[in-house]
Amino acid sequence: MDADALLHPRGPLPPGVYWRRRVGTLLGVVVVLFGASRACGSDGEPRAGVSPTPSASATTTPRPTKPAVSRTASPTASPVAAAGQCRAADLVVNARAGAQLYPAGQRPVLTIGIANKGARPCTFDVGQANRGITVTSGNDRVWSSDDCSPGGGAQVVALQPGAEPTEFSVTWARRRSRPGCPAGQPEAAPGTYRVVGRFGELVSQPDSFSLR
Image (cartoon, one colour):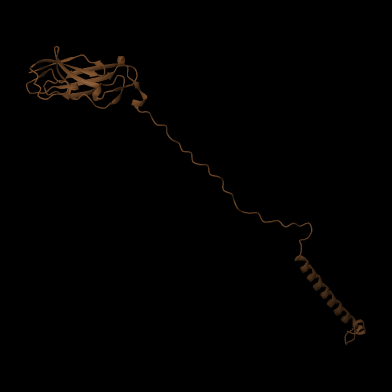
C-alpha cells in the first residue's frame, strides 16, 4: 500500500470519515489478536495462585461386621448325674404279697420296693443282679428269683426323698426252686409263707401270705 495514500486518503467523502474507518479497522485487528493470545495462554500451565483440586472420591468403606457370638447352653445335669450315691441309712426296703390268701391254682404276685427316707436325692442300682425276692416257710428256703434270674446289667435310678418307692413285681408259679434253676421242681405245699425283698445288702421285713 502507498504510504502517501495511507496518510492522505482521497475520495468523495471528507478525510475524517476515512480516518475513522481506518481507526476502527485497526482496533478490530487489535481485539482479535488479543483474544487469540488469551486463548493460547489458557491451554498452557494454570495461572499462578490457582491449584487444581482433585475431585473427592465417593467410595465409602463398609464398617467391619462383628462376628456372631455363638452361645452354647451349658448341658443340664440329669437327676441321676446330679445326685450322689445313696447311703444305706437313707434307704428303706419293703416287700409284700398282692393278697393274704391265694386259692388253689392262683399264682401269687410278689412286689418289692426301695425308697429314699433321707433329705437329699441319691442314686442306687436297682438292676436285676442287685435285687432279689425270696419266699420262705419257717427255715425252709422255698423259692428265690436269684435261682433262675441271677444276672443282668446295672439300672441306676435317682431316688427322690419322700417319693413313692421304686417297685418291681413277679408272679410266682408256686413251685420250689434251687440255685442253678434245675427243672422239675415240685409245687409248694399249701400253707403260710413269707416274702422278703433284697436290694444290694439291704433286706426288707417279711410279709406273710397263705396258699390253699
